Length: 419
Ligand SMILES: Cc1ncc(COP(=O)(O)O)c(C=O)c1O
Image (cartoon, rainbow, N blue to C red; front, side):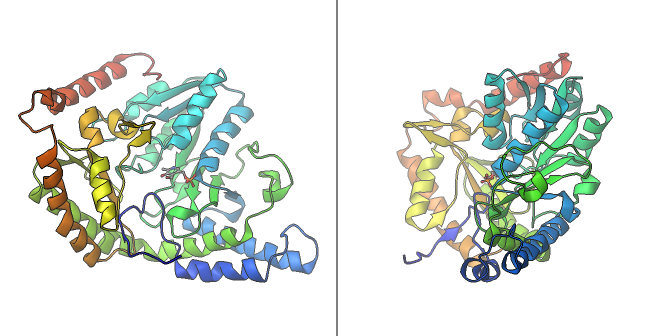
C-alpha cells in the first residue's frame, strides 16, 4: 500500500503511531511473543515489559502502577468504570453530561433500557459546565458521576478537580474521560481527586486497541470483562503485549512533547483559527476560547454543510472532521454542538480541525491556501444565501437566548434535566 501525502488535521480522531513506538513494539511481535502469564522464563521476561509499560503509563498521570488497569480502548475504560460503580455500590443512578463521547452517551442509553436512571447534565453555550447543576444532580442513590476532562469536538476543558470535590462531599464516585488530554495537559490523577480516569493509546501516537483505566487505590472494582486472572483479576483476557509496550513508550513521549503541544502546536492552531475568523466572513468559533486544549479548533461556517467542505478538502489530501454522524442519508447535527445550543444548521456547518506534533507550518499554509476558496465556492452554490427566507433558521441569537433560558430553568428545578 503506498502512503499518500496527507495534511492531517484530525488528531482528536486518531494519531499517527510514532516511529519510536513502532520500534519499541516490533520485538514483541517478532521475538518475545510469550504469554506474560506463563511461569517459564520466556513468559516472565515478557511480563516484565508489561510491568515496565504500566509504570510508564502510571507516570504519565502521576499514578502508582498498581492503579493502572490495561483495557482494549477508551470506550471499554469508560464502560468499565460506570459498570463497576453500579455493581459495587448497588445504586442505580448515574450522572454524566450531554457532551460526552458516545462511549458514555450510548452506554447511558443502554443502562436506561435496563432500568437504571441516567442524568445528562446540560452545558452552557460555550461548552462549560455549571457546577451547581452537577451538585444538585447528585442523589443518595447516585453511584457515579462521569464528566469528561476535555471535549473531543471543541477542546473545551471541564473543571474536573471541582467536579471530583463535589462528588466526594456527596459520597459519589467520580470518573473522568481524559482520552483527549495526555500530551496536551499535565494529568495528575491524585491531585484531581477522581476515583477513575480513562485514557486511550491511539490518541497519543500509540496503536489502536489499547486503553487504560486508572482505579484509585482502595476503590472497590468489579471487572467488566470476566475471564482469566490477568490484570490482578480485574480484567480477563491475555494481555495485548506489543500494544501495551507501545502505550508505555508513547506515554514517555507524551510527557516529553507537552512543551511542543503548548507552544508550537498551540501557535499553529491559533494562526489557523485567527486567519479563518478574520478572513472568512460568517464564521464563528464553537466553544470557549479558554480553557481549551491547545490543538483543537471547531468552527462554524454558516450557510453551508460541513460534509461538503470535508469532501472538497479530502480531494486535496486534507483530513478534518465534523461532529455530524451520517446515518442512512440524513445528517444528524453533532450532539455536542446541539447541547451547546447551536441551531441545527449552524451545527451542520461546523468543522473540527485538531492538530498534533507532526503538523508543520507548511500544513497550515496549505490548508489556508485552499479553505477560503472552498467556502466561497460552496456559498456561491448554496441555496441558503443570507437573504434566503429559510434563513430564519439562522436566528442564532434567538437560539442562544433559548438555550440560556433552558439552563436557567434547569437550575431552578429541584432535579435537573433527565434526558
Ligand atoms: C473523549 C473520548 N472518549 C472516548 C473515546 C473512545 O476511545 P476509543 O476509540 O479508544 O474507544 C474517544 C475517541 O474518539 C474520545 O475522543
